Image 1 (cartoon, rainbow, N blue to C red):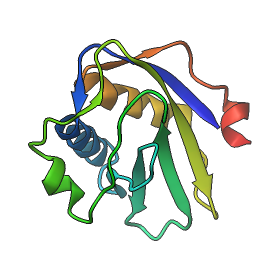
Image 2: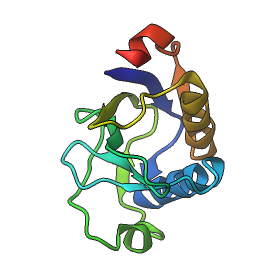
Image 3: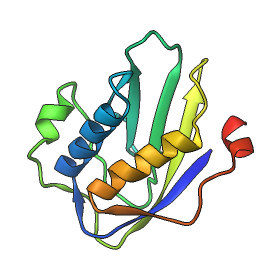
Image 4: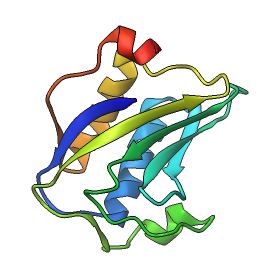
Length: 136
């Protein structure tokens, strides 16, 4: 389902994506670990640490950015990498995926994502999806 509409204020590189994941790790207080997902359109994968079942991911707009294939050590490989993912002043969308018993997304959760995106120079444009949309 569509999540947020975002806009980059500057170029966003692979290292910035690692910073985003580290911010999410902190904000979610260790309940899950976040890392870039090895999918063609790009995304951030939730890795639940507390036994929560299912699959949960935030996918990035495949038409807005460039996402390379990912190796297992992506967090260290991308840490200092300046390869551009999104050009500056690019508008893109995130899509919310939760399957196989993973909990649906919440507004509180999306607020955390917004806060972490802000740290790397990406801001929300538009509004949050409704609670009803998130639960479907």
